[in-house]
Image 1 (cartoon, rainbow, N blue to C red):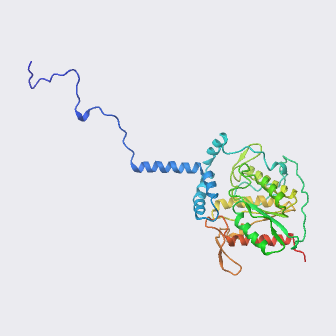
Image 2 (cartoon, rainbow, N blue to C red):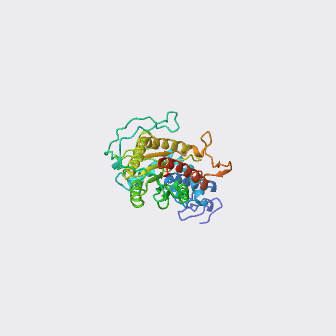
Image 3 (cartoon, one colour):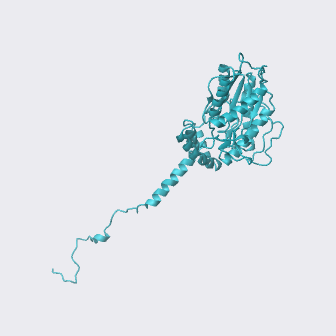
Length: 371
């Protein structure tokens, strides 16, 4: 049978589509390069905020005085502050705690020397009513152990005043300055090198147990005076022995920090040593500085009711008349000296010298040299 131009061609029952409309695999349209970069940036930012605690710890653990550390801490400080104050790190902490990764369940090292403490200042940082009020709390979880007796005497070259300096990274340059003073004064003797531990404090005894460290070092070094400087890493959540956790500077947090500071003081006094507790100086970050002012007030309140403890508050030493951070300050001759490191937290040599001289003046009043 012949076909005409009007008749459709014979087929085998299957219809072949034109090439332009033939069935093809479905393909997703590739994401624009700008969108890819944006997604990667968001993922990086979220990851950085969630891991702000660990990243900050890593930065602070870098060698003191290095440019790498100064840059790392400078970059991470605002990130850590944002993450902590927005509560972004809290789910990550809780998850790690549930998995047993974040906290080693250690016995409360402050409980043996926990005593009734004076009432902490209000929880709001920077509030006008931040002056400590006196009273007692119900925090009597352990019997108050009275000091064994802190001996006062007049130092001489034959029997110098033995000093042990300990603390976090802020104590490093300051401790070196104390060592230089001791080396130039026959009535003073530095017991060993500065016992400083980066990124430590009273907040996380599971990470570093300061009561245990102090007890061991006092036994080994046998000092007359312990100069102790911690706190700059303690503006973080605190957990009470009963498991309740408080965010920084809440009223419960203030009570708990007061309890820990008081316990350390009582422990050292019980071991027969005098305590000079050095507070936290103003730093470049004004928000953290406000928190440090409250912490200094808490510790000062505890020191004030203990005859064998003195508190040195360096906050105003490194600030202008309005309380703002000053990296450079004039020395006694009026020449400007670089007092603080570029990270806005740590001391330069001149800053350590300034604080060490103030400490020496206090020690000379407490332990006047023999005439």
